[in-house]
Length: 238
Image (cartoon, rainbow, N blue to C red; front, side, top):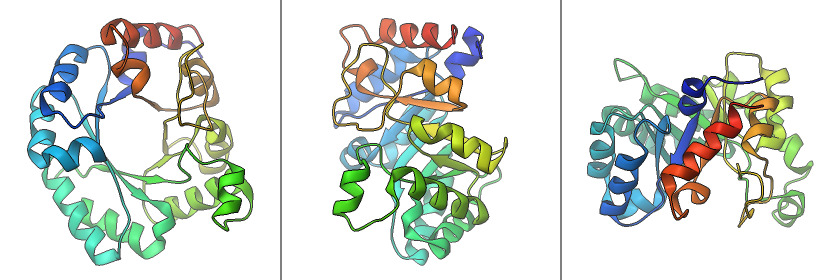
């Protein structure tokens, strides 16, 4: 499926993973209009707090708050309320936190006039089957992703985070309305780094992904704008 340039831009989320507020804002400003979503994760948030989320949002890009909430349901519901009050477009919870916790996150998000999308993280893309065996989790990554994603959908989560390798199966199992977000995206020829279940932008889009999360291939590039534009171009020629 070939995408228009505008659609390809909309479907790229850049991971602004830095402890330095100035660096996060520099990258966000540089990439405004070249990617569709700014992802603020644990590193940036723990260093700079909610104020940084507000600053990035004020630049005009939707914010994806990626804290992967995982706690007792009451705590997660309160944290979800706080995320919703920040005006973020989406935030993450761990599907492994279970049904009550995910339902609490959805309830917390619902306080906003425009509730953020609650994304359930299935199996981190840094884990493979061998790592899951070491954790005592049977069934392999694909089986675990499918089971947790189906549970998340039943709990009211309208999006799921999975590796590109599971996208096609989840699209078939969950239908067209669930938002499938895929980290572990690496442009052709790029190093996988600490990721284990990866794919190129072209492969992820062809499999049915809605939003691609790209971090270091853009942010660590000598020219982040050129790197983002290269990824968009690759998506336009699927």
